[in-house]
Image (cartoon, rainbow, N blue to C red; front, side, top):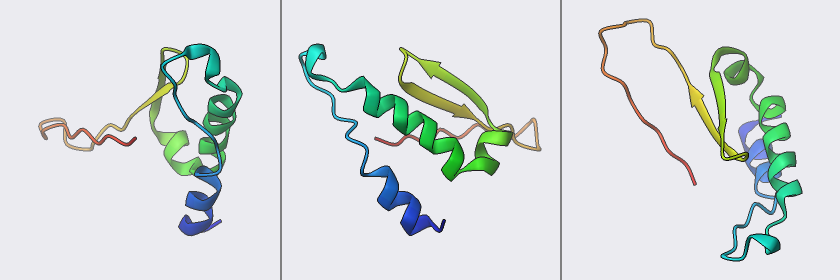
Length: 76
């Protein structure tokens, strides 16, 4: 699966939030979280994974140089 296929598959998940939580399809979020490790196995085998508030994924990658400054990357 190349990066274009991965992006194409990822955007098919309807991870849409609503002001009314009863309208949110949490099954889509769960399927998306299951998809990510299959699409990016190397990342998920290396990174520390934490789920916040049931559906927010945080991945932490340790660098080789402990004195290096940390970097934060966000996606929405």
